[in-house]
Image (cartoon, rainbow, N blue to C red; front, side, top):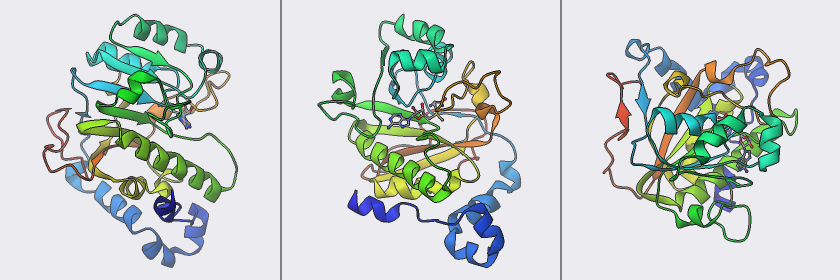
Length: 277
Ligand SMILES: C[S@@+](CC[C@H](N)C(=O)[O-])C[C@H]1O[C@@H](n2cnc3c(N)ncnc32)[C@H](O)[C@@H]1O
């Protein structure tokens, strides 16, 4: 992790630090500033629909919550080669997200799709525990998807929490990169705003040998049935916080070594795709 660690937690400032000392923000967070000014460009006010999946893709999903995203890919995007995994055990998933039972049934009924539990996204492909079975190790994945990665609420200290998430991402990027097909891409969606922007997702990916092919606004409505799952599980009574309705961004990462073979966002697109940055 030596090299990668240098890139971790580049921005130690929290929102409150910044409001106290706005002058320092410029040098501390140049990327964030750029992202904000781009967000108000008139041509980006329309939401562009980009779907980075093709029906023939072999898709590995890691860090699934209640498996509603995997099910949606299968039912609404005709992707049949789905290998859906989560960090939890099967009983853990069912007790945290009882609705997962029906999603899992649909996925498991599809011959060319599979579900695996206890897969650590930071150890993908590593033999001898946690990194997924033979099928994961086989590699050649067209897409490896990690939606809303998060280690869970480990601490109230923002910096430590940011760092833990950064470590998750770097280790995931490194392990996933080795398992991509030659033109394969990692698909990662992250909420916009703090503290997520403190993660510096793009820099972390660069440290892990990846480059951004494109990024675009995540539209949950494109994935009918998808409900954002919180790491800790469902909230009693549903809770008012609906992650799938919050602004989020999807990043498509590919190997730095790829030549520009991929036209940007090789996947299916809506009529207007200038929302990428
Ligand atoms: C905020 S939830 C998002 C769940 C789901 N991807 C979604 O979009 O609804 C974060 C997920 O990251 C998973 N996660 C955290 N650390 C992980 C790891 N090392 N390997 C795989 N998944 C991990 C958690 O188990 C949890 O399911």
